[in-house]
Length: 385
Image 1 (cartoon, rainbow, N blue to C red):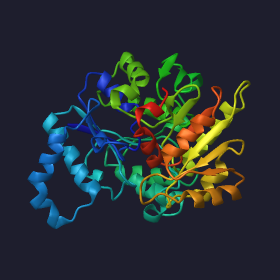
Image 2: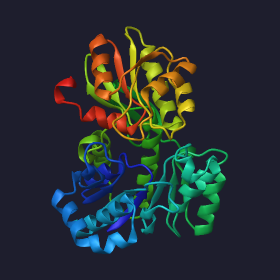
Image 3: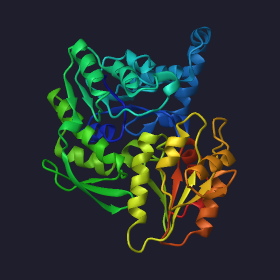
């Protein structure tokens, strides 16, 4: 197995799979089923293996008091070994330097971006967070950096120099010339090497992710990976179907369009907010309706300051302990100039938005991974897609 560590897992597993490689994929968190975290060629790990792994290793694990994520990581690596995968795409759980996924020696490391998230554990400066993320850079292993700032670039350069690793900044050589939306969930990129590159993964942030992945593919080719153009095109076009990826600017309803996205911090939501404002400014558009909930450990005030003020809000809370009270969210949102009513469940908020919406409106559901998870577990008849 030749694992590749990635900070984001959008297109690479689909492209590698389309190249004929048996591809493992380890991600977190899951949305509706624990087995989403561990996949081989898009197929979730079997429930029988999950049960047997715990039964066989319980005596060994319990005295160690491992975290949930540590056990899950061991389970994933064991499954990939049993399945004899050719390559594994491993998403870092938290930070990088001290993350339990960091025991592997990859063929390529990818760090997509740095934003203020998990500051309690990673630090409250971009440079400090970058230092933790840079911990996945290994000796003599190339690393692709998707985005950087004046604060973060020197951190990455110092670490790469220390490890004797080639460092490539995708931001310095943007391969994507332009993008055109075919519908809310399909976009076509223009690049010099790959004209009319169709992607099934939309959202403004995905342009940067796509550029990062195209840069990473170039590096993998230099590491003797055989990745033909047809595989890149198939991986981009069928990424969601091939990987089982959900909740990334996903359209789950039509007339009105219902879009959900798991972006949950200010770095991710700034792209979502800008995209929503662009859509709602088009001629013939109706009303922008936003079903929003957050968890109580995020940069809530910063996020709310970014959100469109021309929207009608449905403030809610996910069915998890970490969820911020919907009433508290409404109070904070009002100080940011956002108006809307409180709904105690995601299902209540979404169905109310559907009932009030016209066909030309757009309903966006997000603010938290857990809000999207609650949406995707709603009874099927609520979703009109």
